[in-house]
Length: 406
Image (tube, rainbow, N blue to C red; front, side):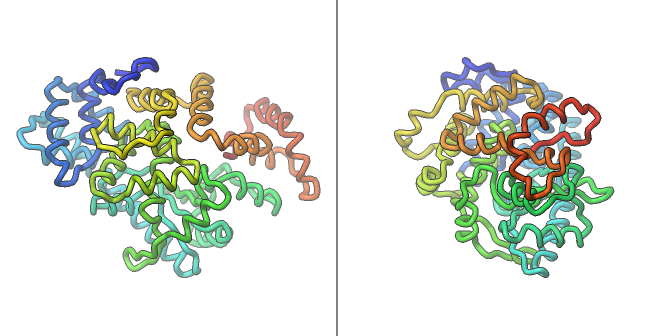
């Protein structure tokens, strides 16, 4: 069942969803011991509504929770899951685990290369987050490998990845020094692929929502760690909570697994929400955190910190839009004009102090550099030419350039 905006004025929207969706939510994380009874009750409550098992399997795939959902259901007592459904879930779980092992091996290889070249790496999400939250690298499903380096190490990190057999994806091309400088200033990652490989890697140097000093502060507060004999920097608990809140909120929480991560983190006592809110206010991430806390309360029944005055000013559209996309049976299509308009409104409300970033983005698009090769002495001309280059690229239907800088 898909919810519509205007239906979510109260916290009972979850009760109006299908039993299969409620079971997806209840099994989208693995509760620690103190919360196990509550999760078990939520599973039984959903089961009592008569689950459409085909719908449930589709939702598990759509929300990318195969391994954690199978693990959650297996430990619930007196649960009657049909044998064919059990086989399907187990098969999905095993495939997820195999993929996670493959990603872990690739991450270890990259960390080894970075260690050898003296580059500090900060893995993001993926198998290490699964290990931290669950003590098991195979429970979280990830599409790719994400790792962050400091801005001054991007070029060295790129050279290291190339030595390891990674190649920038099709949206990349040779750029001049000024073009590269603009990319580092306006974008936040470069995607890499391997020939004949199913996994891609994203090399980050900041988060998309970062203010100029946020990245350096994140590195200064990071914690030196070791995994499989390779050193890396881990975000401290507050920064990690803010990162995950912002990542989920920026994507409008359309996957249940992101809320499941936050539920596990909160239930395990891995984050001080009062301290997180204080840091969030300083870094323009307060609304992403407040949206996360509101959804944790409504979806999983979590107690949340005493709401600050700003929580009462949280636009209802932020919650409504997140619920609409979370409850959408198919994954939301991001290509329609209506979707883009709604997303633009959502983004403005989520980070009301980031208007300057939106304005700056209007003057930058990396594909413009491929369409028109200007020397660095004329780099300034890209800004006034941007509207014409945009029209030119749209008219060239056969152009391989289909992405724009963020």
